[in-house]
Image (cartoon, rainbow, N blue to C red; front, side, top):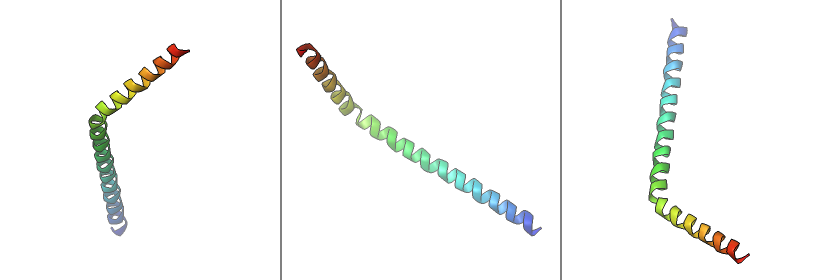
Length: 61
C-alpha cells in the first residue's frame, strides 16, 4: 500500500512539474511574441536601412 501511494505521489509531482514547465515556457513564448511585434517596425526599418546601404555599396563598386 505504501509503495503505490508513493508512486502516485511521484506521478502527480512529475505531472505538476511538467505542467508548470509548459506554462512557464508558454509565458516566455508569449513575451517573445509581444516583444517581436512591438519591435517589428523597428526591425523592418533597420533591415530596410541595411539593404539600402548594401545596394548603395554595390552600386559604388
